[in-house]
Length: 77
Image 1 (cartoon, helix red, strand yellow):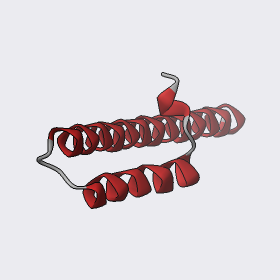
Image 2 (cartoon, helix red, strand yellow):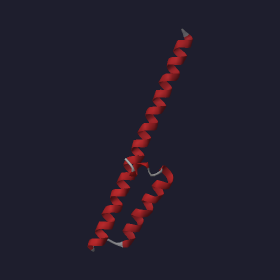
Image 3 (cartoon, one colour):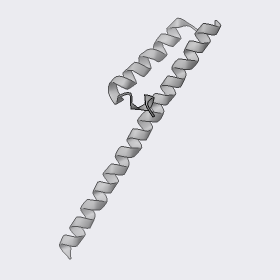
Image 4 (tube, one colour):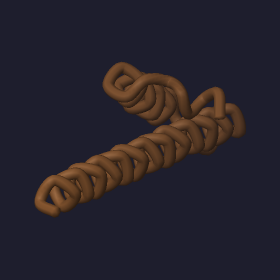
């Protein structure tokens, strides 16, 4: 009986770890999408004359930092 409980506990822990990993991935994708949206808004504002090149560069730098840390999978999704 103890072996069964140990296996059940291991499976539950594995499922919990997979769930946490998936949540982290979703949060990273959302953060990447938000940064991409900010870049687009900054670029649009700059082109329309109400934004600055500095704001666009800052948004681009933040997006590049996110990609360097978490990858660019959110761009394909």
